[in-house]
Image (tube, rainbow, N blue to C red; front, top):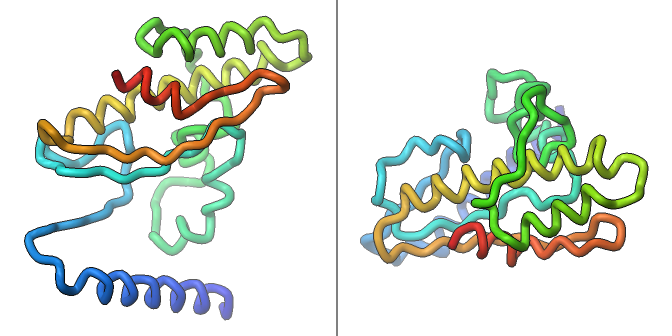
Length: 179
């Protein structure tokens, strides 16, 4: 279709722009891959830097929003499977997630506040959604730590949000959990 053709053309133009911008750089090797952030297909301790922007804690259905891009990648998994595995997905998985002290004091205080909130779905849905998110966050941070070389750097772009009137300082929670 015309839309797909336009999308592919824009992607090609972006790649040309990047290649042009980095033409003079030597010694650096970069790569990207499509895979599970909880099980990176990379050897331990070999990555100098990681730049990532994981899903924010907003209930945006990133898998549905990225369905056109996913279809271009020839992904074999069904959209339902991708939605179940995507960090931040609004779909609740069948196996329940329990809060962990390893997530940090700030994260657990935020989750406790959500669980005590008087709104109708705070405990029955939103808390479950957030527990999944933080479990995925911990697994992702663990993989980032595993693949980074000693002294390597990771830049993680996130944004805070609110559950009702309760602030979720997501950047602070990433820092605390990473530490």
